Image 1: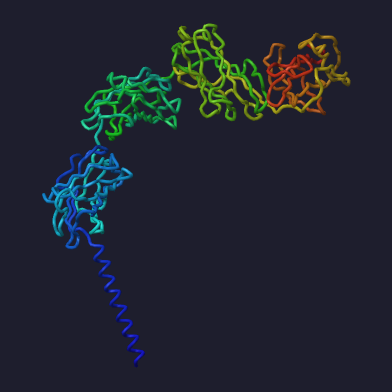
Image 2 (image 1 turned 45 degrees about the vertical axis):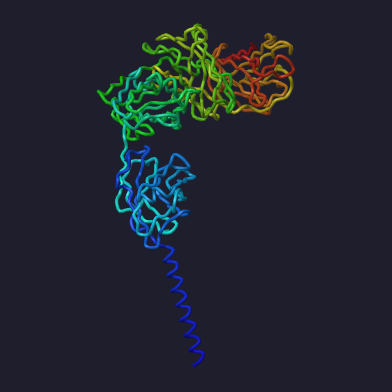
Length: 600
């Protein structure tokens, strides 16, 4: 019986302790009696603008405040403060205002402000059950309706955060009087569009602010940093610099403003401004979906007026990538390709225009600024300079034209033009004419050659030795190469030997050489004339060691070049040591039904 009594006593004591502890916890977690955020209304309910909010609060019956106390005010996520010490003003009651100093703290300059109370005069105090008001300067968040649950107030005495009952609607302002004017109305052509707009009454801009220009979805830019020019007012153009970005090279350009040196960047409220943006026109006529917005005027505004009609694109003509053979037809090897085209009857080019050449998929460039050389007409390289761009080092190279010093860059309409591109060949394959294309900024439509293909091959087997040599005679029915180029000091040499042979069924051509010093591989090319162009030999040669045999099933006349490779560089053989950058001398063999084999 005594043990049961002790157990019951222990249970009663434990229960009493827990009840006491609970009452202590509850007392420490008291809450303010009332909280308001929108009575009176904030000084501004416009998105992303500075605003003074008046907060009302009433401490609980145990929540008196004094020097050393704190008040924590939480705004919706996305609201910010513009200082780590935001402005806080005590308003009522009068004794609270007179006796206390309030210091705002927001170390992260975000949406939570802590207000620390200290004594200014007399005794700083806010009694229990006493309504008080204070104001805080913040920057409103994005446009939205924010329910009361997004706002809250707590104090160091009433630690449970309390939400107001009322919600707040933040609205977005917009620019007005938006108009657009393009320099070109041709579909798919480069064009500079001049945008005019007027900031709202709360839309003043400065350093760090952003203007966002959105074109129709079919428009694009040709670089991740498109050209933008601030034009008016004069103070806007001179006071500000801009950084322009379009990471996806799509249809949306962000223009970030900054101070221009010692000049202060500013565009006032209710101020008309113009700027120009360089893009590539799309295909749609309407521009109701072209918009402009800013950091402060966040509601995107569409262009006004009558839609601009875009006309059909013009096209370059006589496009060729293969009429002059590339310097290399070996897979994954650096090669210079000669590209030919004619501007259209409306396609004159000048400084600021560009030419864009697309090679087959799998081709690449070895630099973001690959080598491009203007060739013809003769005035083209004299008057123009060319800067090639391929940001992704892929298969598409854009050549931007500029004036060459005091010379004025121009390329007339209907003009045959030649330029060379340094690229890296793709994988071994035959690439048809449709895999190549070219356009200009004026002749916006992409055009492929009407014919022509090029075969990229894997290099032949390695060879040894230091210079070309005469092959040995071949069995009856085969055509053999003629003499080598003579002394090693002579690159081309002269024909010193002819070999006659007969064929009654098929034509076979054997090419043989002792090799080039340091050469790692060879490529054999053929052409139907000595002048070329040369391309990979077909049918593919069959190698026996370092000697290839090419078999034709019908009578043919072909000329051949054998070229050597050291690593990935073409080499020649002017001496016993391989020299980079030149073509080797070639064997030329004429094969007919009664072949006569000579060296050229």
